[in-house]
Image 1 (cartoon, rainbow, N blue to C red):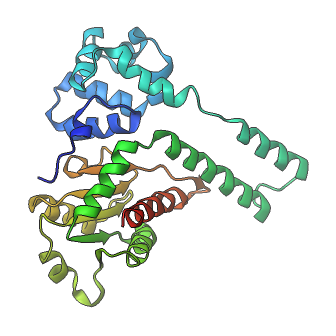
Image 2: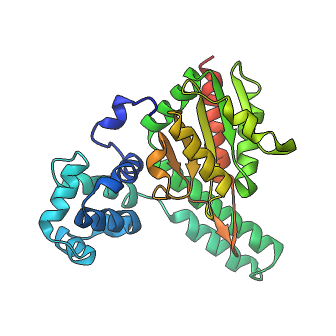
Length: 279
């Protein structure tokens, strides 16, 4: 079922690791504990600022259930778990948004002018990258790179909107000493390529909502073979979250319904260059 990293079995040291742990254990939780899991995943800011009694009321569970949920995630109590949410959300700088707003007002930009859209995308991408910087787990980064370094072959996959990130990873890692395969269906060769995958390899997949059936099938196939899977995605609680060895949740900037790839590319560059530095 893949390599188990002892660091990920310890008490989560940051919110990103906690969210991944919740996703992995979600199917085994009781109905009450799932209610808490759903609430803390959907309302992290409220978990950071509200009292335990208010959170229990909003999640529609007894106070004792919050304690049991915290214990199930390895914490001594709810306050220890809540500290992770407070560390992330209460110390976050936000003054750059005010600077962008003032710049737009001073320039008297129309809301759909190229310069206004340029600033909006910059603002959204800065926000997304800052969020990723604050939420990323150093243990998970180290573990993902270690899995890639140990693998006989690194298989990389992503389709449609995720394809540019997957292609970049393949392009960058082709400069390394590792065996790297980009999985796509050009010439109908996807099935022959995936048949070669074994538990000595690693699958690095990029997938965003609405999750491509091709990617879902590949994750199931790799999981069935015991191949460690490292994923860049937008929701830890997606249907196949429990099958992932390492899952990086990335929230991209969005303007007028068009989502960016800046944060995903940032993370992809980090993984690729980190692996090459180990050589």
